[in-house]
Structures are given as structure tokens and as C-alpha cells.
Length: 242
Image (cartoon, rainbow, N blue to C red):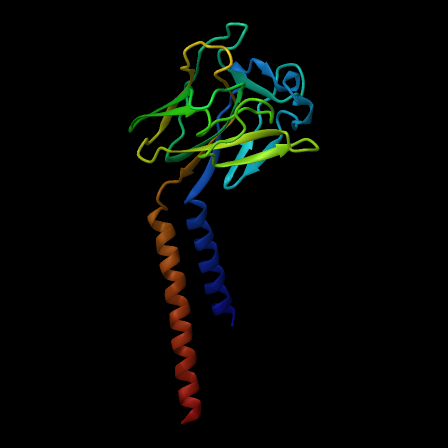
């Protein structure tokens, strides 16, 4: 009985180690370039505090904070105040990246206007994705601008009538290898009202390294031990029957 319990425990521990090596999520810190306090936006008082966690589908986000408090912050591209049009988050060293999730909405917006862009750079290459109003980005506030988008990953809603939202996008970057840099750009034509993307969070889905040979050996040993014990049990039953 003790041997069987040991074998089962060994198998369970090794299976856990293998599963732990498969996937995890790594947040990308935006704090150095947060320049917008979303509480000051239309309906912004309904948003959760910065620094809190938000889960949409399979993605868990750590919401950015506006400096000096706990308001929800964001990296806002071109606006009426001539904010910078390009933001770079460099010095990253995130291995095994397969998928990147973002929380991006827009201030204002005109249907069909491509107003933003992500450029993801890694050891395996560069991946570029556009943010187009009505496709994968929309206004953060349900009002007179773009309120629908056909290719969102998911959304979180706030306020008594769900008029405020944070929308998630999903980007397949399989093959990028080690993620080293993320660039978030304004790429519109400068027409105020066409859309001004802002970024509230970024997270990555990563696949861990292949388990060590010793881990696979432990897994094989666990299966063999269970097989041996099962065989011995059947043999004992056969002898008893004789």
C-alpha cells in the first residue's frame, strides 16, 4: 500500500511540474510612460482603480496607474495637447511569447479609420498590427462615436448602464521568440475626432522551456511503478484463485 501511495504521489508531482512548464502570463510595465488620467475622461469615474487586476477571457491584466494616485492610467497617443505619437517599451526579455493581449480603447473615433499600431519585436522577427476603428478598437464611452467593433477579444463594462468599457485585443506572435520591444504608435492622419488610441495594459502568454530530462524520467518512473504494482496485484489474485 505504501509503495502504491509513493508511486501515485511521484506521478502527481511530476505531472504538476510538466504542466507548470507549459504556459504563464507576464505583464509589461507601462508606468514609465503613462500620461493620461482616465478618471477625467467621459464616464471615467466608473473605471476600476489603477494597479488592480482585470481578467478578460484567458488574459489577466494589471491595470496601469496614473502617477501620484490610484486612478486608472493609460498611455494616450495624439490628442489636442499634441502628445507624443510613439511610445516604446524596450529592454524586455520575455521568452517563449506566443500571444500578446492589450487593453486599448479610443477617445473619439471615425468608422474605418486606422488610428494606431503595435510593433512587437523579438529575437525571431517583427510583428506589426493595425488598430482600426470599428474593427479592433472603439471609443471607450458609449456615446456619439464608434460603439461597435467586429474583432475584439473581449470587453469589461462599467457604470449603471454599461456605458464605459475596456476592450481587449489578441495578437498572435508565434515565432517571435524572446520579446525585446513593444512600440505603440499613433498612425492616423492627424484629424481630430478620427480616433486617439490609449493603452491601459499589456500582457503576454508564454510557453515555458521543455521540462528537464530528469522530470520526464520521474514521470516515466511513476507510470512504470504503477504498472508494476498493478501487474503484481493481478498475479497475487491469480495465485489466490489457484
